[in-house]
Structures are given as C-alpha cells and as structure tokens.
Amino acid sequence: MKKILVIHGPNLNLLGEREPGVYGTDTFDSINSEITELALGEGIYCEIFQSNHEGEIIDQLHLARKSFDGVIINAGAYTHYSYAIRDAIAAIKIPVVEVHLSNIHARDEFRHTSVIAPVCVGQIAGFGKQSYFLAVKALKYIFEENKTDE
Ligand code: DQA
Image 1 (tube, rainbow, N blue to C red):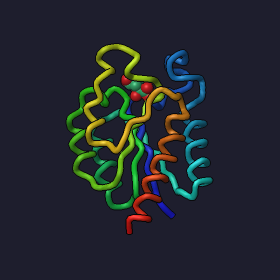
Image 2 (cartoon, protein in one colour):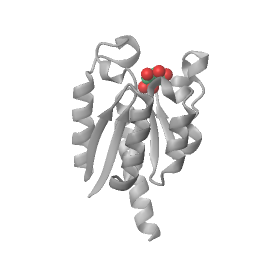
Image 3 (cartoon, rainbow, N blue to C red):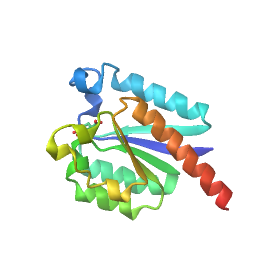
Image 4 (tube, helix red, strand yellow):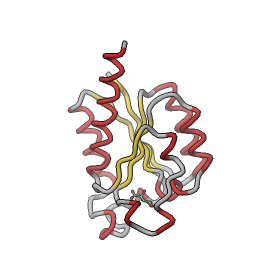
C-alpha cells in the first residue's frame, strides 16, 4: 500500500475557528479524518503532521523521503517566502503536491507568489478542504502513472 504524508504548516491547527469566511468552519481534526478516510478508500495509507515551526516542517520532509511515497503540503504563509522549505522539497525525490484551501491568486498580493510551486509536482488552491482530497487523487494518479512506466 502506498503511504502519503500530509504536512500542515502554521496556523492550520486553528482551522474551524480561524477566519471561517476564508477557510471554512470544518475543524482541523475533522478535515484530517476526512483526508485519511478518503485516502484509505483510494487504497492509500495517510499520516498527518502539523507544525507552526519552519524547521520542524523541514525535518518532516527529510524523514518523509525514506518512509513515504508522496507528500501533500499546505505550508501556510511559509509558502510565500520560505526558501528553506523550497530547498527541502527540491532535495527529496518523492512527489510533493502543494495545497491551499483558499485561492491564493485571488487574495493579497503577497499571497500570489509561491516559492515552493516550482519544486512541487503541482498546486491545488481554492477548493476549501476539497483541495486536500483532490491532492490525494493527484498523488494516486502519479503513482498509477509511474506503475505503467515500469
Ligand atoms: C493558505 C493560504 C496562505 O496564504 C495562508 O497564509 C495560510 C493558508 C491556504 O490554505 O489557503 O495560512 O495556505
């Protein structure tokens, strides 16, 4: 069974109470349960990690390269300026899908730039919690594609 890691960056632990008009009212825990259930339904084992600290996110990316087949990352505000997270993603060989609940391109100017996008396999933004579900399906698609390449 393929294994994926979902990494949530800063402030995402407050989902449900944080700016509900932007990020929705579903709680962090309920979204995570839905992601892991949906993944299982797709035949994929899923673990969740959240941190408000850049270095911890980098450590998890390093660890993931040995024990997971793919990563889904919502790096929160680090998306827009963390070259260190970008370098960590570039350093690992497993596919990393960038996710955002909101459409970052339709928001404040500083959110229009993602410094991690060029080193991710793709970006999914603007679909609320569905962005994560679509990312699971994107990884499944990548796994299937690689199988046919073998
Ligand atoms: C976010 C968008 C970021 O700009 C913001 O800093 C977040 C959440 C999103 O999921 O829409 O923390 O990544």
